[in-house]
Amino acid sequence: MKILNLILVFTVFLTVGAQAQDKLEQDRKAIKSLAGFYKVNFNYGEVTSPDPNYTFSKPYRSHGNEWAEVIIDEPKRIVIQHMLAINDSTVIKHWRQDWTYEDPEIMLYTQDNAWKKVTLNPADVKGKWTQKVYQVDDSPRYQGYGTWSHVGGRDAWQSETDSPLPRRESTVRKDYNVLNRGSRITITKDGWMFEQDNKKVVRTPQGDKLIAVEKGYEEFTKIDAAKFAYAQKWWDSQKTYWADVRDVWADLAKTSNTNFKVQTNVNGKLLYETLFSLGDQSIKEKWTANQNKEKIKTALQPYLVK
Image 1 (cartoon, rainbow, N blue to C red):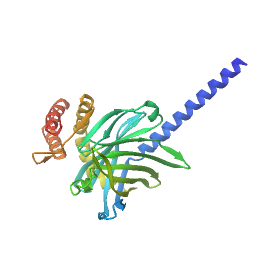
Image 2: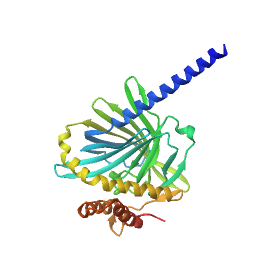
Image 3: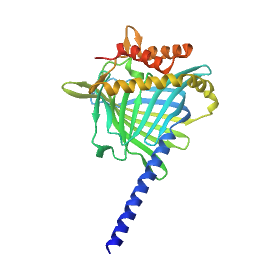
Image 4: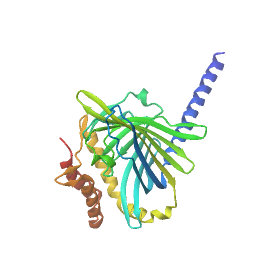
């Protein structure tokens, strides 16, 4: 009887382990399916406010062609770089998303372009993936974690976390300083949908004050890869430099204390402009990885708040 019980326990252990591995592979497949060539429609609009006198902002709508490329594919880490293709001769390195599995290390946005490093309880992230979103200059943006679900043939993931103001509002709005993002990603037959329930918050030492709630969605629909020939050529020449940029940012985050703050404008020069021009110079002058990293570190120092 003891032998039979041991066999049953061992069988259950193997079955559970196999199911967990199958789930991990389903998760990885869903994340990697975010990569591709897309037309993107951006739609955002404020829907409610606790203030009866609040003046709702004008709905935001835009569109563009975006290429998302898997640049790192490891068992528990997948990195996807996005590029905007404006026309046949212009490309903008866009946002980046790093997906890490059961990762307890996270940088939570506080306010005023500052983040706090936090170590989560491993039990809180068991079976979950963290989506770490970065700016066009590879500085932090926001990070949230959640569980991928695969029910009825639908792949979906969701999380809630704080972030800086979206780029579409950061230069025109001063009436709030934190965006609490409720994000849902759903894979569709033609691409994927990025839905958001966002709370616009004024954060002070006295607490948070909600000023408005916003609904949003970004619809990624697959299109012909031929539209991105120039973008692919551009990225092929730039990707080594930007790998060095990512390494420098990662080193800075590791060696900083619990708080990490970045200012985006120094002496009239935006951070992304500094790094983009440095990349062009690196390619023109054929810098080595060591040269890249030294020049990137030097360029970043004025933008890091001590």
